[in-house]
Image 1 (tube, one colour):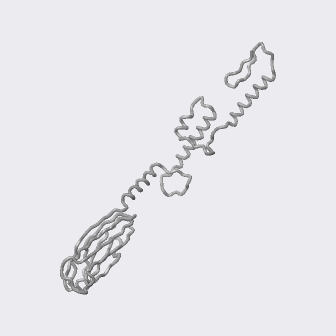
Image 2 (cartoon, one colour):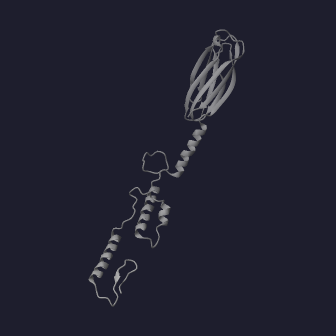
Image 3 (cartoon, rainbow, N blue to C red):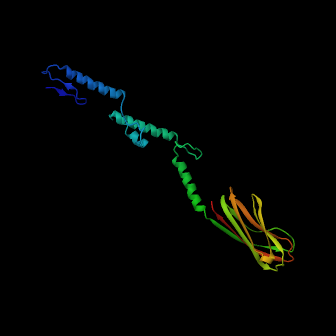
Length: 235
């Protein structure tokens, strides 16, 4: 009685069977089909929508006695993963949408994002006094703030604190920085109360110190100014 082979089910006639050419031809057809599948194997090549497994998972699947289709799929996935590794970008200057960003560079960006969110809304303040008068027109520093890189709103308010205030006298309050010198000057007279507001928006690329100075034009006496200075980071 005829039997079949284990792997490809080829027919094996028994010694007592008559020879049948159809059985022989059927065996050859199956052998031809099996050999053809080796010549042009069918396997998942990840050119469609099927997600590519991680490279390490694919590499682990490349083992001895694995079916050819599974073996080829794992090799393709492993190579795709290796190619991506070779094109990982460790900077933030490329605009190529097909290149992956390294995890290390991603952490750098996340740290900067966290730092930025933490610093926006930072408030700094300082108060100081200075004495002006006697017509000297000497510019005197009242107070200063050192600010880190960013965009800041700087506001200052000066008012007479003590001393004799001559009527209709004029004095200035000036905002300066170490890097840019005089930024703006606001003038006031004693007839309107003498108070001065200075408001300025500054974009700082490197740490800079901002100062408030005051001087008089024609004071007959001397007065003490009290100056409050505030800075709020907005970007």
